[in-house]
Amino acid sequence: MRKLPYFQILCALLLLSSLVFFWQCIAHLARRDYVAAGMLTVIGIATLWVGSELARLSLSERDS
Amino acid sequence: MPLAPTVLGINLWLLLQVVPLWLAQAMAPKWLIVYAPLPLVVLLVGLQLRRHIVGQVSLLIGFPLLLTLMDALGPIGQERSLPQSAVLLKLLMFALYLAATCRQITHDASAAASRLSVSGWTVKSLEVPRPSLKQRRRALTHQLLLAYCVAMPALLLYAICLHGPNIRQFVRLLGTMPKVTALQAALLSASTMLWASLFYFGVMRPLKLHISHDPTLRHDVSKLRQVARRGRPRPHLYVAMTVALVGMAALLWLSL
Image 1: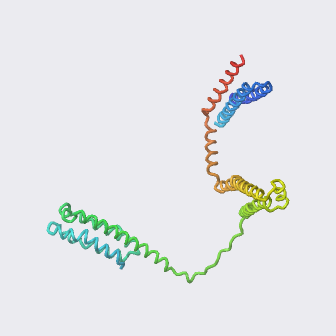
Image 2: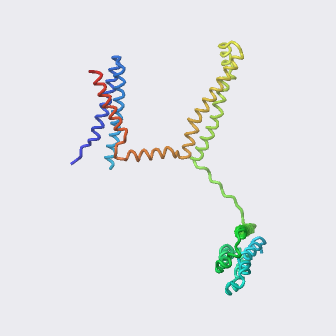
Image 3: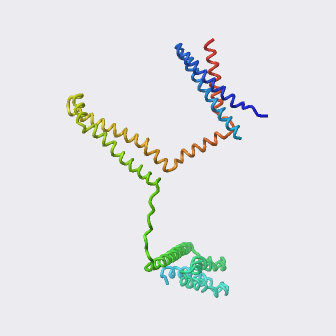
């Protein structure tokens, strides 16, 4: 039975969610809510970072 | 027979063997007196055969080892024959003997090599092979870089200081010639610094690193590969997760 690639699915989800955060950031910038926009940027970058680390883990899991 | 090793060796023999035997006199065993000339014989034979390995071994190992026969006298002989100053003298003599012998052996070897006759040899120069395409391309690149090094600053110098229309524009802009000269000097120094920095960081440094096979980059890449292959998450995963969660919590708290 083929194992589900959890890490890869999670990684794709995180990368997509980071895009959602950036989109929300732009929306808040349009409303001149700069604090929220800044926080959303930080959250988006952190999510992107977590996604990239999970992508690395999924690759190492696939190689092993 | 070479003078320095012979004299120093005989001196060493006298100091280490004959004098203690003479001082020990009746206390010395008979066999030791019989064997006393043996180191001298080994020394002389070794000096005669110093161009052969047997002679060299007997000079550097055999003769010094045979001199240690005096240890058989034990404390009786040593008390009388080994005052503090004599020990220093013997050590100095031994070091000088070893140095002189080694020097003589190397001198003999180099003299033998220089005596090798080459008059009968036919000397013929090797045909120089045509450089490969890669080597020619590399040489051409270096020549082009050299030309670029000269041409580009020369062009800047011409444009700033010698080109007529530019100078007329400077005069029209600033009014007087001293001001134009000051501006030209400032422009020249700025362009020279910029050019030198750009050329070094953009061309010469990458080229130098490429020629030396970029050891730092290779080390970094191999380290990164090792880290990437490791199946454990790095600490910054937890930091990023914490930042994202705290940020989202703060955003929710602020929006409520």
